[in-house]
Length: 221
Image (cartoon, rainbow, N blue to C red; front, side, top):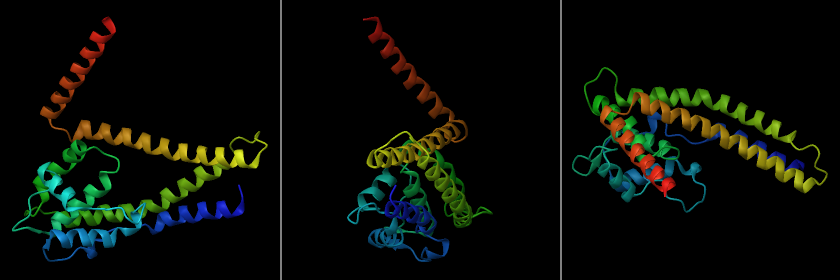
């Protein structure tokens, strides 16, 4: 791989440590209207956009989160700090989890800690998650570098530089994808075992049973 491309990849990996997060102290102490909420999120998470025209959070999204019971309804059209923390959790989770899985995780969190009198506030929970995330960013960066270095040793038998570079990048991307895939499988298993209610589990079993019956019926024809 040419030096320029390798430099670009290493800069990309280094950028993992500089990804913008909404720091606990950044969330306003006053309640916000819808437009203020979307403006705040766009400003603080701009670096996570893939394309400049991407919308991180829209009014429609927020309304849908409320309709799907992911987010409590605002009070007099205003969103509190706890609303903001939940929206940030939703933003990160929606990239890898289904709406139903997010609901399974956030429903008990909301019921126990949203604007309540619990010994642990939702703000303190967010602060702890944020702290752990910052600590793990270094470990994640090192692991990505290790995968990249490993991909450089792939396909040594290739003679053409162009084809070798392509296969190296393909190998690198595949390793990253498989890493995400394994972690997603683990997350879904944890949700099924520890977050889903009994009724939800029974519903899932019935749906899977119906799908199995349909497949069996098709195969018998």
